[in-house]
Length: 168
Image (cartoon, rainbow, N blue to C red; front, side, top):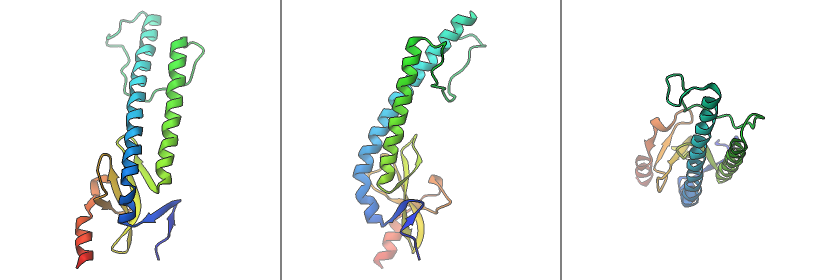
């Protein structure tokens, strides 16, 4: 017996999951665009923080001792932050929270968000009477792959073979 609900997510048929793809595509496209804007703001924040640190230490920007970016950014507003940095941190934090809420709305469609950086989501579904993940990655136009529950994107298998078997 297959559960109707797994950890709060519905089990969908391939057709039901594919019917959600246009809405999923629209929402994920918007989220990824907003995330791109946040990443640009994070880059600006890192630049401003580095400049302020360099000015305080007397270090030249680009010197070997200059810190590199690419790590998680702390958006906690600190007393020593300039007014511009404080405002930028608040804006980033607010936008990140909004993006998280939007991913929650994607999950309300029945999706399981696997990698929000690239727009990778799964739906629980059945293939050959087994519970699997129906796998969708932005900007695909339909769900054409699945994988086992304990596997991921690299283990995707085409649904075309499943459909062919069901027609025979």
